[in-house]
Image (cartoon, rainbow, N blue to C red; front, side):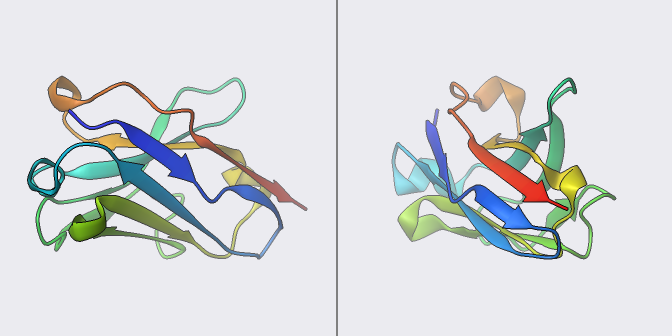
Length: 120
């Protein structure tokens, strides 16, 4: 299992950008073999998957329709870190952002997340 720690959130104006980081515990070997994803939860809504990246070389990525073309997920296995570059932010992107392993049976505990607030 990996324990994620998210960072990089903040307050930004609509149209702005932020880059989130998710650093994990455990070994590089374990992290490298996990597909990872970013999730978000807005007030009063269920947690949703924003973007995912395949294990090892991260050559396969997927995005929700709401962020496609604006967000980019990437990974650095040596640093055991997953990133989420967010551009052209809108108020609808306001949420707490989390990262974790894609496969539920392999997930560790959820981290505290990082708050992203986009003002209009």
